[in-house]
Image 1 (spheres, rainbow, N blue to C red):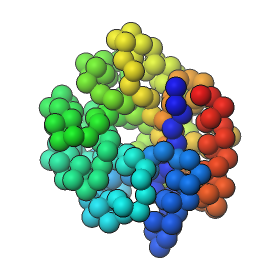
Image 2 (cartoon, rainbow, N blue to C red):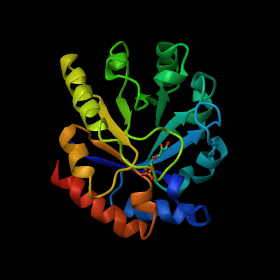
Image 3 (cartoon, rainbow, N blue to C red):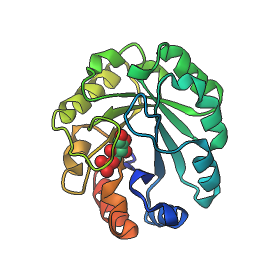
Length: 220
Ligand SMILES: O=C(CO)[C@H](O)[C@H](O)COP(=O)(O)O
């Protein structure tokens, strides 16, 4: 199975965003991760469609868009038009999860579902056959630079078991507090898409990507 790195631009230097993204692409990061926050579902506000659209052509990486917003169904079309290839919505943020996932697919993007640290994996069960990816949050969403919550490892294992049970080949992405020091445990638990913000963009993005990719490739 391909192991994928999704650097989160939340931790990037926005004065040189295009260049930093290119550095991660050159070193093999397949995705770029966008943390979209609305100040309601999560306390912080980040960025939206205009930022995606303006940098869509800077790289060929897959745009992996994590919508931490209430009722994301209102915006999925606009994010797809702005360049999103994968759109992740939160189970906790949708009044109609199924309709939201179907709308993502209808507009041509891949659909993914995420759960916060306090939401049990069992709640994903009705939706796993509708998605291309499950995102397990390993921090409470809202801010970069937090510490990985250790109980996330068990949730990754439970998610892999759930996907196996329904013969799903969906990816498992994990987001929050992942560094070269703990990424092996996350991969060993069953994840194959790693989001990393601080670990990539704090310091030398090219060197950090290279080091992270070396570990990921050893698990393929
Ligand atoms: O979704 C997020 C916060 O809601 C961030 O993507 C996530 O926390 C990654 O940042 P870091 O690698 O710095 O922990």
